[in-house]
Image 1 (cartoon, rainbow, N blue to C red):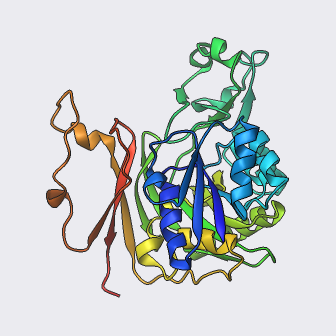
Image 2 (cartoon, rainbow, N blue to C red):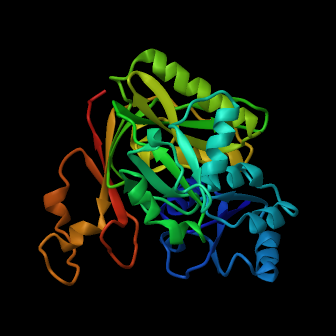
Length: 357
């Protein structure tokens, strides 16, 4: 079986590594020749997502399709889906590509989100005062804090008027956070679904810095509700594969923040902490195999390694960190093989096993 993987980033790399357990081959389609998945995949096809001739050649090589990022153009997803099955389906990915569409979809299911307001050139001066202070976000292509701006009042919002005329934005009201958590669900072709335990997440400047699984200090009732929300969302999307839901816990209430139609940064702990990793689950769904066990075997903590670490000595040029000083017994280092370290760029992660279970 040859899996066609759209996207060659670090999630793709770990998916390719998981596929080797099943002797499945993986052909990756990526815009750039140098990417993390290139070092492990069976074949790399480098091309633009608008190149239908190359997309056709790619899809004829594979048996099934999946993604490692939601930022694949919908036209390409729709085109490829006409030839081979895409897991998850193209419409699921389309909904998660746009924050505004995503939140309206979630609310239509009766599931709460942070209060939000659609911003356009006609209403930028009339946004209700109740939405301030808020966070202005681009509706599409924002991740790791990119495309997000704090706006304390209407005057601050009005300064973005030129950008609003050419880019779609959403304004989210700032809420008082108790905790940030996420849940990862796996759903198969027949509608069976299983969730991993909640992970407790810590962000800095919109980027995940630390994640612990399981989030043992979360109210068990909220854990049940998170699973219920995740299963409702997955069922409504007719979803197949790994799906991640990020939540805010605010004054004891659970609010959906974002959906990711793929394995997630907060699920890397599953590689060392669970019987079946999130990446193996995605491969299993591609190969029509049963869902693997999500049983926790160890309490684990993830710490992302950012490109900032290469500039810790205030040097103008990046310097490779001393990994022996950073890692020690009980910690597992994973570097993604990215060519250029940059401030705010995820270069790898460390998983620490916190128990001796």
